[in-house]
Length: 124
Image (cartoon, rainbow, N blue to C red; front, side, top):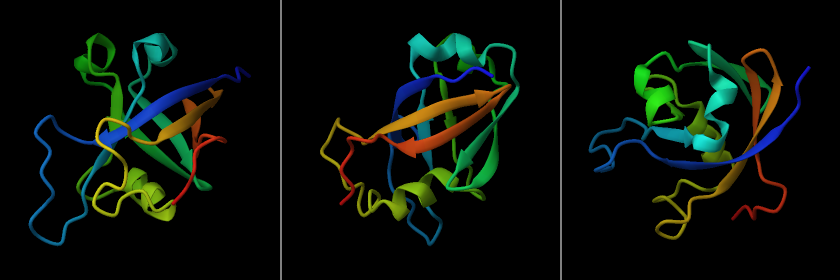
């Protein structure tokens, strides 16, 4: 089993992000970064353990391997947002502009990962 850790960033999904006007939850994405893109090569889906629950994320779009290496919440399934809420990081996007919280994505094995707060990150 391969075990590696990568520092990743979280951000609201979309270039021109605006909060939803109704009661829907906002969606967030995990940006992997070009340095780690090759670790996802050959996968259409990845499985990410977030607080003990494994979620499936679709990464089959061509842009994942070409330029936009990230996986996102969906309108119906928001495990990334829920994780951030648990750590008090979503109240009006509770981090300074341009400095989202650092997270850790650990490779557990074949398309399986674990998402956690970085050990040095401070929860509010």
